[in-house]
Image 1: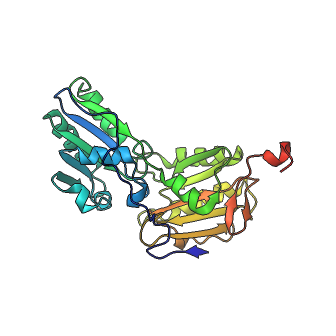
Image 2 (image 1 turned 90 degrees about the horizontal axis):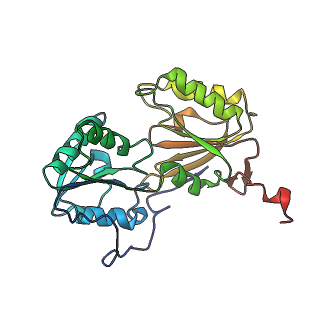
Length: 279
């Protein structure tokens, strides 16, 4: 197990964006909405284009916990509209309404905005309201949670992988089970989002049981809590030894495939070079 305090995983170099040239400036006079990814949470891992979008926004909209990841200096002079958990539709509507009124709006998400985040819902609202001609829309990528976790674990995603969320709030559990079985049977490395909440703690155990039908018990499992945030913790266990109590909604799990192994104190899924070349 490797754990870290406040400083581990923190970037030491500041990014100077004063002269950063980014595309997507709204010069037509109509409002805009840019859905951006904040990345894992460390300010140094915020993409320059996302930073530029915030700097040029009239309003910043997002989940309260994610808005808190943005430096107060960066938010100065901008209206902040935040909502709590389970209010995704409400905050996306606020963002769209503000953009329709002619303002430049940034909707913030953790990780990447197009992976289990708000880019799709904002598009649905614009589509339903037939607003694409009235509002300039743009998605600005961020570092996804599973690649942040993978970086801390070593190189577990070097071969084909599948990303599966265990949240059954929007997806029936029966469909999640089918996806888990299919990915495990096809020998994908599996990145698991939303693995264990207080309201559905049993889903993780059921998911691991499905995977163990197709993988040996010694298969490495990377457990990353709060990647690149205060309280970061990185562990490597196996399907047999992992402790579900170490997992919560701020955890990403990466389950290895049949080739994944422990290399040093990290996870490695070989790409296959050693089978073709003399390395």
